[in-house]
Image (cartoon, rainbow, N blue to C red):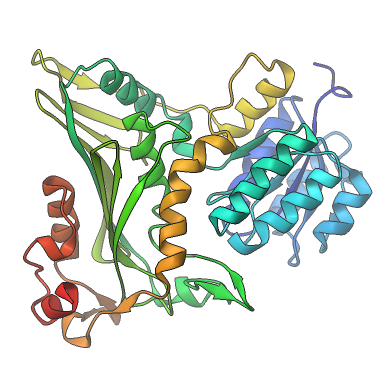
Length: 387
């Protein structure tokens, strides 16, 4: 591919996770596979990142603007990466489609199921493709786990459990007006532990289970908050698809951080996938130990390859996110999370934590249970959880 034929890529949002996208874009641009069409963010890029942009062939002419609409109208890119707050995904995606651009939208793709269905329809009508930023979908270990499940290597799957215990400071929820909010200025945001930081957990579990894009997904929820101003920072969800339970139990209020795990409970085997480290372990029905191939395919590279040759399938196409969106929509409809009582919380170096939250979310994943179906280790919260 000549430099002139390489897709021109615009990035909307260069801070937060947008910086990861910027680094990835600069990496691919350095190979000549894409060109940087422009950057947009109300705050200018960090000086070191801007210096790297300017160092690219033609980089001195790359526009860096505060306004995304102005950038899209000026440069009309071939691909637009949308890495902005959740409630801005659909409006910006629409502007990019109007400019004739393909899309790479960060997860979750939209803030409601209605918005999701609108984006699916509008991208199809425009004849453009959309990749979604579920980076774990490029994991070789995840793909291997999905093949093992599909091939019956662990026998009939009784259920899939996911547990995650992460550390977030108060600043995580004060960094922006939309953080931890269900709505902002009347528009859905749906930003919570289940739908944003741990969105990969549910989406990856659904992928391992082989859930079809058009599957019916029933959702049960128990959502609580300690640090979050409105949405959940500690939650359990049970998704049921054709009788298969998938339980996701997570917290952002753990004393210590540990890699989240997807546990496949087979009648004759067991798999454990750390989707953030691409580590797969377990045993199959014949007693063989399982280990997953390391590494993952970057989603931008995959999108570029797909545009060059449509026979290369997208790893995280928009339609494949439909099962996950059933969870997000259930969270949106559930409304604000329930506060946990102060008696359940202790201070660790000034940070509110749930002392035994990591053990509880792990027990949920092992037993395929919600919080209220276990004996919560938060004595003062037992009544709240059972209510």
